[in-house]
Length: 214
Image 1 (cartoon, rainbow, N blue to C red):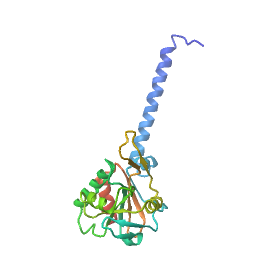
Image 2 (image 1 turned 90 degrees about the vertical axis):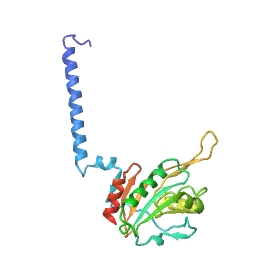
Image 3 (image 1 turned 90 degrees about the horizontal axis):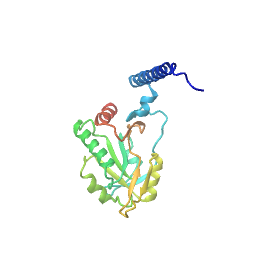
Image 4 (image 1 turned 45 degrees about the vertical axis):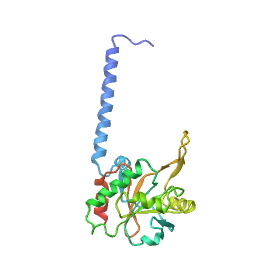
């Protein structure tokens, strides 16, 4: 059905008004969600999640430290822990996160962080030997302890902490890299997961968690 030319400007005006109204509603919703500390949308987009009720991660495991010492989950019993899963050949995310952790630890009172265990768990046991981990982690804060193991041991730990990783082989035939999830997990001294920080979280975010729970 053809539209009367005289009515077209009115229809266009109505359309513009509807668009502006929609923009206004969405803008108001955005402001409300970002101002509301209980907003679910804010929680979804935040780089940090605290108070994770009911999420159980961890269990019994056995790995090798970068000093060549066998450790288990019991080694860190009654100690607050910051855990990060990655690999030494990681080109960007891992060194960025480890450098951030280093800056935060350097900025905090040593007495405050004395009992804190910082664990860097390798998802690339094929290349990340204890010696490789030790050399790599010498570039960062001395509190950071590298852990590795056999393929089976590492796979077991990944499952315990719901960590994803997968080898990626480039078409040019160069050595593989590893695609992996990138979260910082903070457990308190009671072994409760109290915070998760995804890649992109700031030094302020991490320092806030450590200052609050240590």
